[in-house]
Length: 112
Image 1 (cartoon, rainbow, N blue to C red):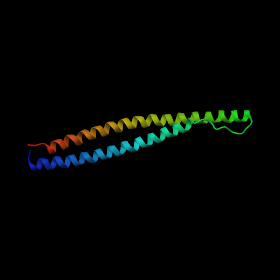
Image 2 (cartoon, rainbow, N blue to C red):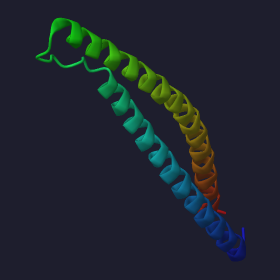
Image 3 (tube, rainbow, N blue to C red):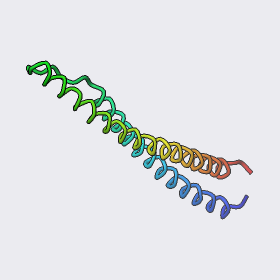
Image 4 (tube, rainbow, N blue to C red):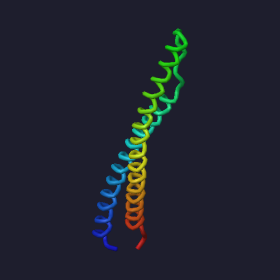
C-alpha cells in the first residue's frame, strides 16, 4: 500500500468516525427522550392522593383521575412504541457506522 493509499484511507476513516459520532449522538438523544417517556409513564402510575372530601366525592374524583391517567398512559405508550422503533433503528445505524470506522482504521493501520 502506498503512502497515498494510506492518506486516502485515513481521510475515509476520519469521515467514517464523524458519521459514527453523529449516529451515536442521535442514539443518545432518542434514548434520552425514551427515558423521559418512561418517567412520564411511571408518574401516571402513582395512586390518586387521599383527599379530605365526602366519600362519594372522593370516589368520583378518583375515578375521573383514573380515566384521565388511562388516556395519558395510552398516549405515552404510543410514543414509547415509536421511540423504541427509532432507538432500534438508531442502534443498528450506529453499529454499522462503528463497523465501517473500525474496518477502515484497521486497513489504515495494517502493515504492508
